[in-house]
Figure 1 (cartoon, rainbow, N blue to C red):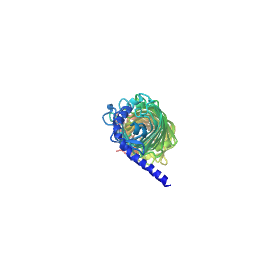
Figure 2: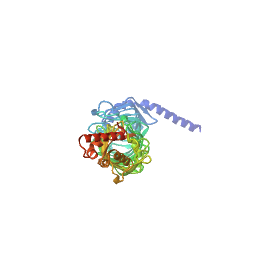
Figure 3: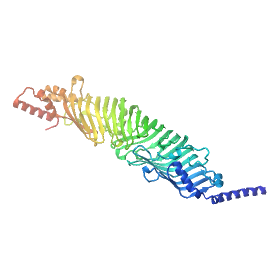
Figure 4: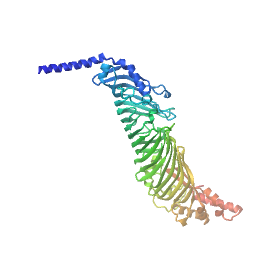
Length: 554
């Protein structure tokens, strides 16, 4: 027993001596110029590093303060700096032949600068050109020149993505972790990449990539699955906070690149979507099923037949986009017979306010809208139509300014809307609505146009036509009756020709005012008949006084 204890102690002692003595016998710092040269050749960039040390227990050479130069076309700042570089090596060739054979590579806490140029070229596009331009020499045991390693890892990394010339805030990824098996410039390899983004979001990309394109690393083919959780585009700097647009997104997508285009399809789940500075976050999630094709050279792409769903509301979205030099959109949003009840939940998202205390119930919405411009200054244009809905909690008669004692015939606080058709233009400067046609049984048919200011002020001019023969009643019947009493039976004809109406106030508190002067101007002949001279003037003044009293005017 004592004999074996002595043997074991001797073995341990020898091991300790070896562990202590080998780093003293092998001065790995002498390999630094060779390592820098070989890595520079492999990456096609100048590589510099600080002091080297040898760890026998982990069979690795550790280089401190590593730096990889950038493509000169993108400036003099380094492409990558790292706290340390761990090269897993074979000890026997290192000790006895002073030869470095790399089997593993780990980069700790790298700072990576990614820049996209005007011509669609990335600053990493030329990375590895020297190594990828020739195949692996099977007779050459050292893997450094071709950078073929069994395991390649990045831990605790940080990356910024910016454009040249600079536009907006750089996109930042933190806590980057990359794991690659059997990395080679000339073969396909599996990888897994994960990172944190501002706003407590996470990104994971898993798949296969390679071989590295010998002329443009950014054109390397790959096939991967992208998972994003809790991505906040405002916190990440993708959207300007002042634009008033925000959301929290979860993405599950498949991405495949053939070197010239990235084709992607998947789903986007949006919570708390808001599209206007004056809007409010959506109470229901918005789900998008999409398919895109992105051109790597132009940094632009096509959105193909995306489906947007909110509850039971479904719309289609397609068109194009361009990410260079700044993001611009050119999309078309269409929907046929969508339930208005679901639309009700989206109105606050865009900052659209209904009269206080009112809600839309029932009916259908049809839209055909173009969406163009940068996200922070979009212009939305096109026709829309709403059929057979009701505005509950809104008494139309109470909004008719200055009509004292008018019997409206309207019961309750519900306004029926048979139809609304118009062309809309929505921009940061406000909303313009043209070619308006409305049919509300309580008021009549109305046509016209108007605007809504960014502050929500209304300025509409409509022509309201009253015709009891078409079954129109409520407020319109009360108004027609009052006009008959004031001006005689010819008021029926005047009302049929059209009563000018202005709508002012705000969308939350509108004021509807019949235009007395406009009514007289448009219907002078029918109201005053064949009277002549002073007689006509006297009659006109009498009508004006009567209507003035009716509409609360002096």
